Image (cartoon, rainbow, N blue to C red; front, side, top):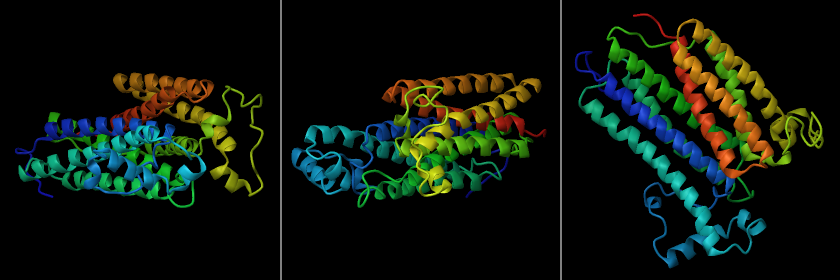
Length: 343
């Protein structure tokens, strides 16, 4: 990847580019949530990276797409008798999700080639930008791998693959934010060094990753519907109905009651860790990051509870997922500030 001297580099422009891509990723995550909640994810049964850009353009094309959908278990076992109009509705969300994914890819590849051609990439950043761009391509492949799990034998996608898809998107988001902040710092001080992830930051990231994984499993297993009360689950602190027949590990990774329980209570562990980070940042004078952390943690906890008591109202649940993505971005920015090193 072509890189150049500090005098020709344009770190500020690169940072603005990455912030815009990060915003696109948040939007894609939100549309992905709608796609999941509307059970739209299996409506497109083929992966056509180029020709799939255009939706069906006439009635014959719509009928042909619908006939493909009729061959998969979701239609035969859940949506038998669905109208063409209803199919068009679910097709739209999956199509939009894929189009936005392609847009993220284009938004990474085209500017990267331009900056490389202009030799505007600071020394040491070319490999990182290439890795982030490659991760977008990998995310597309993971998305199809996820969809493929629901086309032959299942009526939905594997919650393990859905979690991989979502967590990869959030890891990409964190990488974009971290790199944008490194470049922004470099734009202000040409001698600035990249921030490092401290041991404490790594531990906090692990705590948050567990919560994000549990949230993805809740979505993939429709576990949000097993209880609509809080703090108790159907009048019990620990839910009744957990299936232990296959052993503790199978229950831990597959039982919707247990996973819902763990997601709602591990959130307090994650919140406590994030509030400790906010407290440390406040003491260091990083009050903007501290305030943002406090606000996003409060918003996400409130939305999580509201999602449960609303019976998984779609737009509340989507807001919960979008704010979850914003939480990841703000945590990445906060940990970057925590790990910043003097020039």
